Length: 360
Ligand code: NAD
Ligand code: TYD
Image 1 (cartoon, rainbow, N blue to C red):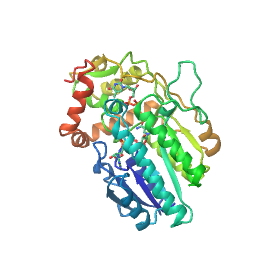
Image 2: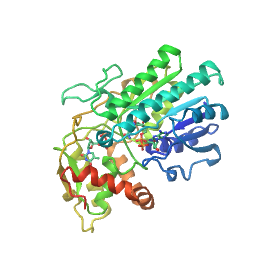
Image 3: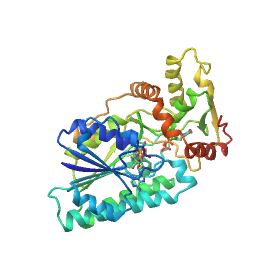
Image 4: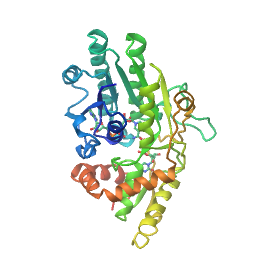
């Protein structure tokens, strides 16, 4: 791994991974390809550990000619593919871009890699690592065992279906053409630089302003939560020691129901702001109309990551949430920059007003 193309590196996990990788691998050069959609921000790539080893390219994974040029110009030997449309609620109100980016975009990258690496053999030891989600497996009942690498796919949202499609394409490119691939399916990430449309940063963002904290349905849905730095170490472990064509499940072993998670966030804000007019912040919780097709429960077995690669998550939920809240408190300029403008306000109105939620 010398010349790494990171797609979607201006988003939440991709940017955390680039910060991590430049520190962990002192020789590696990183090339970020990002379309800078509403979810991608150049600020996420400021203050990198070694900026001289990073190049930013503004463009889309759907632009085949651009991808072809990048692979050759920078003799890319590793693609780490994060770029995607990622928000389930947006996939319900507008699925088309999920198909375009997550399915067609992944196909475009795979085709470009196949031509450059397998036909023209521009590098000796290439690798395509695909970042995916546990949502491809669908939903669990309360007493079901956790997802594992052999659980059949049963995606329930357009987002999950588009990621499942991309996983299948990646797998097929190994089986059919021998493209050297690995896949990680990870549970819900949280931590610095997550766009405040997702549950944890939205709750911090709203609570700080004394706005209602909208909880879908009865709030008893369960996700497995992983601090983003643990996801970065997991991807690194798979790149270093993972077996080609294998899938690895990554999770954090933290599974509070949504409403409990929001209460934990509120308690941390109470610690920081005991004199706030919004104290106790949990009083801001508001139950609102549920998400259609809302998956009830996710849980992932990380046995394969542990046994084969010796990986384990390092952060428990309490540490991870304290770090996350502290980061958002310290980076109010970032929040203002990424939520400024009409696009974020329009999304909040569109998604929450129709649920009967107060947006003020
Ligand atoms: P994000 O929404 O924060 O960032 C996505 C990035 O992709 C943005 O920078 C965006 O500009 C870029 N992008 C979108 N379309 C593009 C295109 N056509 N070409 C180039 N760039 C494009 O997402 P995230 O939360 O960082 O997720 C990254 C990856 O991890 C995704 O593949 C997602 O499915 C997967 N994942 C996320 C989670 C999670 O909890 N966030 C969990 C498991 C897996
Ligand atoms: P989210 O962060 O959107 O991630 P995902 O849907 O990919 O798991 O949502 C996490 C959980 O929180 C999910 O069960 C939906 C719920 N949720 C709310 O209750 N209210 C909200 O405003 C949001 C955004 C999510």
